Image (tube, rainbow, N blue to C red; front, side):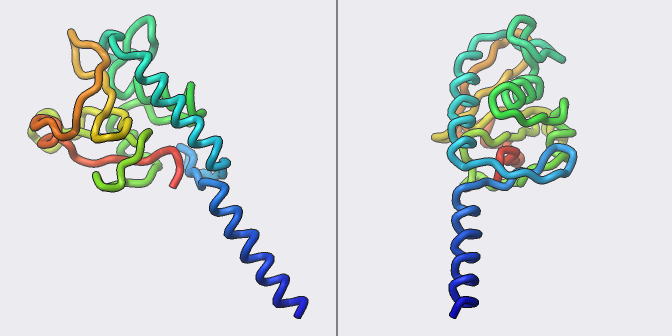
Length: 168
């Protein structure tokens, strides 16, 4: 009888742990766990902070509010400052790095969305999914950080994949 309660208690404890915590894979391939509530609060701040950056100019190689951002620099900045996750610096290295690939129906706020903008199959752009089919990104030279819709014909055609770096 004691063995039964021990097994049930252990199973319940593991179940509670799994529901209360999110597994993270760190950029260097390590593993960590974070409380689900804390992650949700961080993702709220991530999206809020992204909204605050709307209008900041695009700058190739940029990674700061004062100097501007390029597309990957924006995500590196947001993830590091708001979620405490270090992402690889370039779009291609983000794509090759850790994280869970997700399909469009599985998208959650905070996911990175990747695009093929040159029509040659090479992924060269990334944005931050904010929910309701929209994403925030630093589009290109001469433009500023803005929100666009994945249902827009251009973005729908060039959408390639998405990755979740913030837990799964």
